[in-house]
Image (tube, rainbow, N blue to C red; front, side):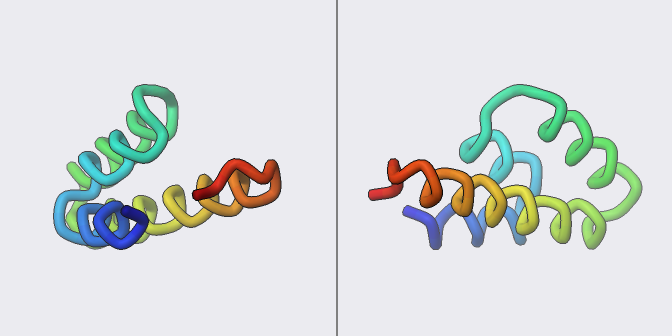
Length: 63
């Protein structure tokens, strides 16, 4: 499932972020960056997804 989130983060950045972290400040920032351009939105999406996965693995809740 992680691969799907990363691919969506690259192709449709807000969707990848939404499916990973839900609605919140990270999603709003990603939408704004995507409106500025696809590339900044994609970079932020991959970063946000990686940070979320890292946090889950630290807490021991990654499957």
